[in-house]
Image 1 (tube, rainbow, N blue to C red):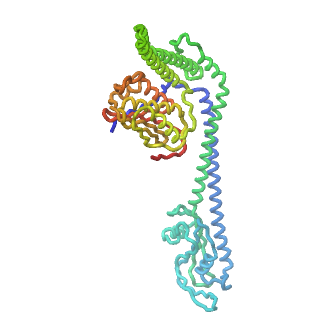
Image 2: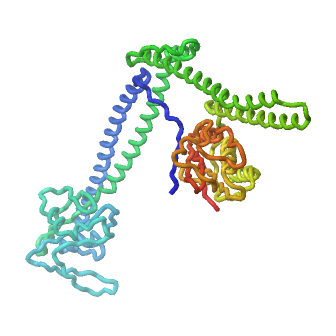
Image 3: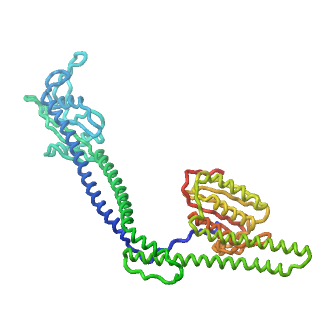
Length: 512
């Protein structure tokens, strides 16, 4: 594996003293009051939904038991018109006429008695008669409930042995609210008594209640965020005069940049003093950048100026000598012009409008770059991969960086060697790379090649290696896009420079 160098943009320095602005305090109080109110709303809503669920369950249980009691009070089989002679037949016929909900279970339970069998005459379609044995135990018909409580002896025993007519039972399908009605045989009949049981599974209703409360909690959270945002804006309007003073202090002149205001306290006045200090820091940084530009220009332009002056002073009278001097002077002036342009570009990289992002087709951008770099040198140019999709970036700056990387690849590789370029979408990043088959860069020079006026120990083929500003410009363009430059290189194995730019893009894909 090649050693990898990852270069990132400069990280902002954290303030030495954290203050609590009055604007933040106002917003915190508003948010706190809103949080208390929304908490009360959630509690009241939960109580109301729970009470409504309990009312719905109670209504369902009361309705089913009422229908059974009404049917038992009539005591006549609707099919035959004959009175029921046993509890089992009464419960069975009633269950046949019921249509329970998905969350309900209806069943009967016949107790054991001295006469476990009771004949019951039914009139069939053919008019024949028959007898049906009535056995003690459960009677259940209808669709399958979430859990068949009647088939669970322990659950049935817990319901029937309870001294209450209504209760709650835990089952694998969740809690079930139940109610039971005692069913006695007709007077004089020897058949056993029984129970009619209605159960209502509340897990589905509870899930609906929880989902509703989740929605209310989400809306409450969004409302809390909106209230905090509004409070922040209102507090900002209220504190506008203080901010005006702060902005005025930030615009003070430039004569003395060494003095600082001592900051004490944690209010807006302290923030004002801190802002004044920050203003002085910015001005001092600006002048430092200016001095750096002047120093860089003087350092790099001194040599070509000396060369031009020396040739002009020693220029003879012969036409051939004058022509040669003019050619050398012109070359040096062109190099000076390139150096000045590069230095101005690096200085502009610190300005906010250095990058002008716009939606760009990555496929078209990659194709344009490929077309522009091929005339740079006699190399075997290979377009490896093209990313499809749309990304927001500055196409001119990205093209400038890629052309610079391609020019470096030509400068530090042999004629006829392969130079590969490509682009790809990896996660939320777009990657564009240039790879050459040059001599490579030693690991200890990876960090220096991106510095100004540094060539990282590499030797260019065919003459001067340039001013050493190219890779510094590439890094400045990447950092202006909030990205970085990755370098993979080792001696004798070539170099691969990759621009990694985080972008907001549409869904794209790669194709070879």
